Length: 122
View 1 (cartoon, helix red, strand yellow):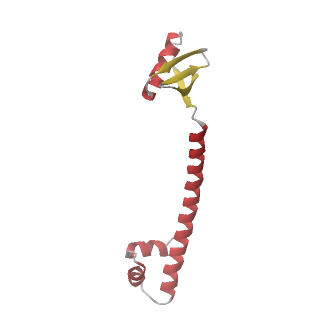
View 2 (tube, rainbow, N blue to C red):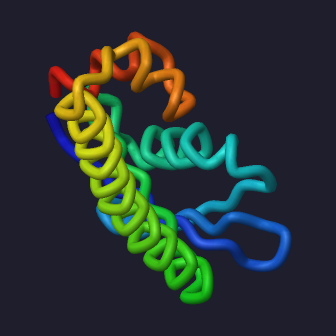
View 3 (tube, rainbow, N blue to C red):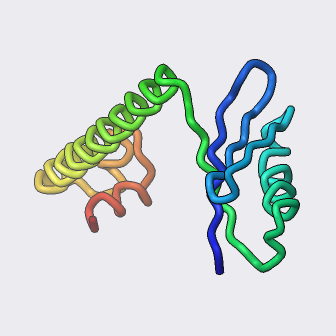
């Protein structure tokens, strides 16, 4: 199966669609029309066999920067959540080591009995 690549970028109010494999370009007014317009161009250029279409959107550098920063923040948040869960487990285990029941530990820490049980068993 042949693969075609649609290289898409925004230009004013239009989406420009370049298909290097056929050496032609087209445009779409709305992003949802990009794939159908690309497919139409490929078929107009004589490609009637089954093919795969891969769409790549060129984003402005400011958008790429924001996305990269968001990914870093998500990774940091995941790390902090993991650390917070470790500390919660330590707090529960500390209370249990002092002879409190799981229910009592839950009441003191503002956690449900089920959550305390999860922390103990994780």
